[in-house]
Length: 443
Image 1 (cartoon, rainbow, N blue to C red):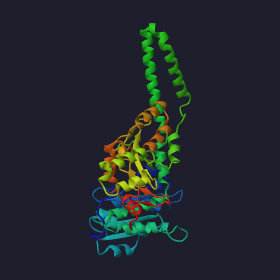
Image 2 (image 1 turned 180 degrees about the horizontal axis):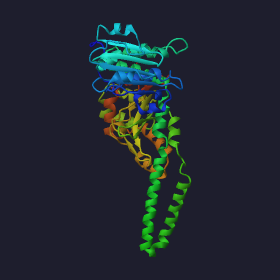
Image 3 (image 1 turned 45 degrees about the vertical axis):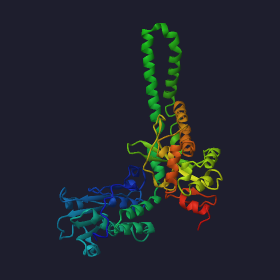
Image 4 (image 1 turned 135 degrees about the vertical axis):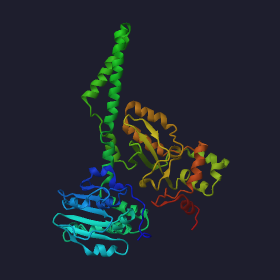
């Protein structure tokens, strides 16, 4: 067993993200493992979240003799799956439980474990001897055997993806487990839930900040009026304007709320993610469509080094930006605060949706937005969130052939990129290297 089952802890997963507390079904699988591993809890949520009835819940609990007195607690539980770690295997069957002999028989060659079920209280109990992270991974599939009330006639059968997840628990790769677990996210609307959690009331924060700033400025002007009465004729018009602004804010506190939420929910080009510091990061995906073809042709004729330095680069550039016989899929990442302060993010931890998108070199490697910096500032001044989001997408689709630093980076990385970021008119997507072979007629 030790050579077959992965021992790397699963610290977190999509099914332990706080957004699960807002998804019906997942939010009724509660509790956690009292070790630095979320594998069992993640599997329980992935499988049972959609099987729980409206009035049902399932508690996942872990008891360790070093910290707990488990069995008095176990016998009072209901609607639970419980793991008890013991130094020495118990001899008796806990009151109210029936032993499932095949559990101990299955694991007998690796370590000692026993499984019990209380059907009346809907409790599955797994007792393991000196459990560690690796053993817990190996034990996870037993959860199906020890929760029989979820299975059988009239109940949804186990799906192909769920079977693959059970099998992955006994493999030697944590990556296989993560991949199998990820396939079950399709049964839950994570994107909408995450978008609502991150962006609900996003504009309200900006409105509050602007309201507070306006009030502070009004107070400053009032003090100046008191000490500088001679300037009153100059200051009163501005004061009246500010009073009007405050009146509009306070009379319409929800004006414009959820523009960002509604826009992103309906956009195929923007993916919101939670940043490391709790802020909202916006990943943008699009085609590179803003470039100067004439400038590129001039550089090709003069044989500049960033075109001739790598085999295949010239062929690819010509097809993408002169002949336009294929397109480059690209992504970038930005951070936008509620008061529309926008900053590019270098080297972000990109989501899976961006795997087949080549990074926008200006943003991802150089943290630069070029000529769009002024436009971002205009959006902030006007308070236009939608303009700011559209500018992010437009900036992502730009490539400046006139910047040698950027183009050196672009051509040094494009041919080694492993994602299928080159799209042909027939819908075929290829890696840059494979695209060059197709363009040059190579088998």
